[in-house]
Length: 261
Ligand SMILES: C[S@@+](CC[C@H](N)C(=O)[O-])C[C@H]1O[C@@H](n2cnc3c(N)ncnc32)[C@H](O)[C@@H]1O
Image (cartoon, rainbow, N blue to C red; front, side, top):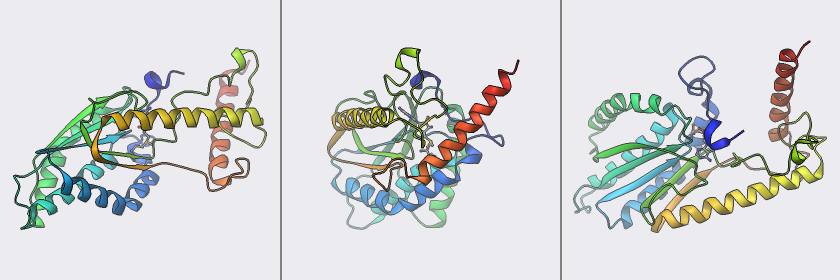
């Protein structure tokens, strides 16, 4: 599988779509609101440029990314209302990034209504709405996405646990499946496979940080939320291994169904 080309969340608004199956991710957004608010306030306070560039990496589609956008607009709107804020209103440039297969059309179609509801909410709360612009950026965040020193704030929620590729060497040249029957780390996963995942994580994370370092302005900030492990023992992590184990079994039974003689 080519992650950059083929990977995407389930499109549209049906029962199995990402839009209708992303409450868990929404919870993560709500729990990290305070950290996001703090970062936006600090970036806004130090801003020397007339526009603030804000990026949601791995935005997917549906309400979560727009809820992030809405929070940034609200915090900047509150800041620009303060009497001590004597500068011209700051303009906000949002870039919503995901892999090219993402249902960007869904996001784009929601923008008109989003603009209207933001204007109405801010009016009700007597808050200024800073001018804002929203654009989509298809591409992997494991590549350069923006010009050098051009972004003030990166945000990414529930994405960075996705690897850039299946760890190299996992299929042993296609001859032998080292992690047969599994799609991640399970009780019977060999130690060598765990090491391959660890190395892939380190490579990906290092690359991600190097790339964002190049794109961030001096004093820019990042708010990154992603799944991690509580315990060193990777075999004894029922919160992460168990759901992936169930998913692997479901996939296995689908394959068996299709391959029945
Ligand atoms: C679980 S969704 C989270 C979406 C959204 N941030 C939210 O909170 O609802 C993870 C998203 O990360 C995206 N993603 C995974 N790897 C990526 C990569 N290398 N570059 C950009 N997006 C990626 C997926 O396509 C998916 O839309």
